[in-house]
Structure formats: C-alpha cells, structure tokens
Amino acid sequence: MTAAIAVIDGKWKTALLWLLEAGPCRPAELRRRLPGLSEKVLTQALREMQADGLVHREVHDVLPPKTEYSLTAFGRDLSDALGPVSDWGHRRLERLVGEQSP
Image (cartoon, rainbow, N blue to C red; front, side, top):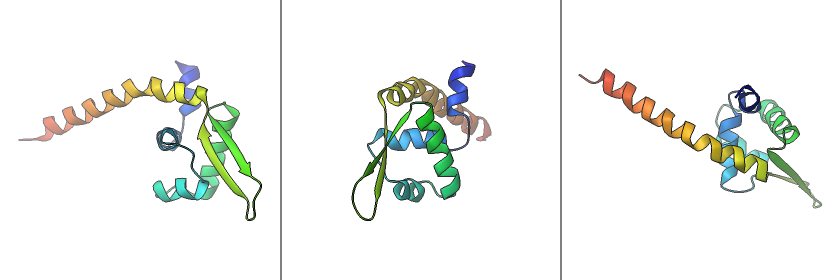
C-alpha cells in the first residue's frame, strides 16, 4: 500500500490522472482545468509521474513545439485501481453531509 500511495502522493497527481483518463492533454489545457495549479508544480508533478511510468510525454516536431501528456497502460491500471477509492470518498462525503443536516 505504501508503494502505491507514494506514487500518487501530493495535491495534484490524482486530479491529473483523472484528467488524462479522457485522453492526451497539453500542459496549458491541464492548467486551465485545474485552477490554482502553477506551471512549476504541474511540470514537477508530470515529471514525477513520467518517472514512475504513469504518463507518456510526447513532443511533436512542429513550430512552436507542441507537447502532450497521456496515460500509459501502467497509469490506466492505477486509475482503474483508484476507482473504488473514489467511490468510497463520494459515499463518505454524502455521509458527512447527512450528519450535518437537521
């Protein structure tokens, strides 16, 4: 469990996994879809995810340079594994809201 948590540790990695599930994205698109994520932190998170084998970085040979990130098969495996955890989180939030209702 610790090895898995270490790969998704941080504020943005699970959100990036979720966005990349839909298909390849350019860095600017990822930043637009995640308000509050700085370019520096995005770059760092994507580099770490690439080093962990979760994302693939493709640089297209055009001017200006175009870079896209996509999930690898290993990254899709992790995303699938996190699905039940996400479902549990939604149930937890519903429970908390129910407890706060009069």
